Length: 186
Ligand code: HEM
Image 1: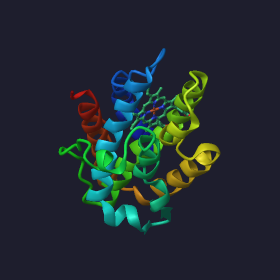
Image 2: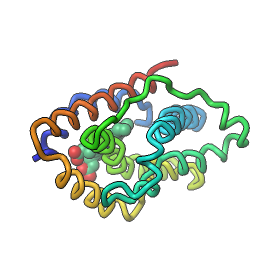
Image 3: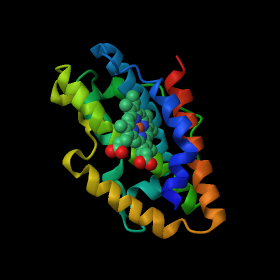
Image 4: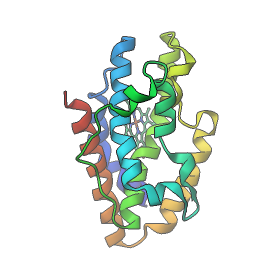
């Protein structure tokens, strides 16, 4: 099953990227802002680079709904005006998805992070962070399970052959690695 394969192949990446996010046991609000800025600097150009895929209904996925940049913009507008936001650093070393299996592999990472996002959101609320800066990690909120199941259905329907699976796994690992490298870069 492709999900098991992706999960096993990226388990070490997941563990490693958690170490690049200083959220626990506590995070100061300015360090949290910097973390949001990092995610914005990755997702904003990534969604632009793959704008064709992200702006349409791709296969049966409501891709515009799955974009991360809008919620990051909402959170960051608490700290910055539009001009400052637009000038934030952007990652130049982005993953490139030039086939459907690669796009699905990358989406596994991005969509899967909404699951952990629920744990992170509970943590942010516990620390008393205002709701206005918690949109990104909250992702789809109460719809998270449904959105994840919707993604999995398409993943399993479209990534079938050994060759396709290998492409998806490689893209997922590459996405984790490039994001982690960017998060750790000062
Ligand atoms: C401190 C940071 C993080 C924590 C605490 C965390 C925590 C978690 C947890 C608890 C789950 C399992 C949720 C469930 O099964 O309901 C999960 C799943 C997942 N997370 Fe994270 N996560 C973090 C960061 C990230 C990041 C930055 C990414 C990638 C952008 C990511 C990608 C994933 C993926 C792909 C899954 C799905 C695994 C699967 O079911 O196959 N996580 N995370």
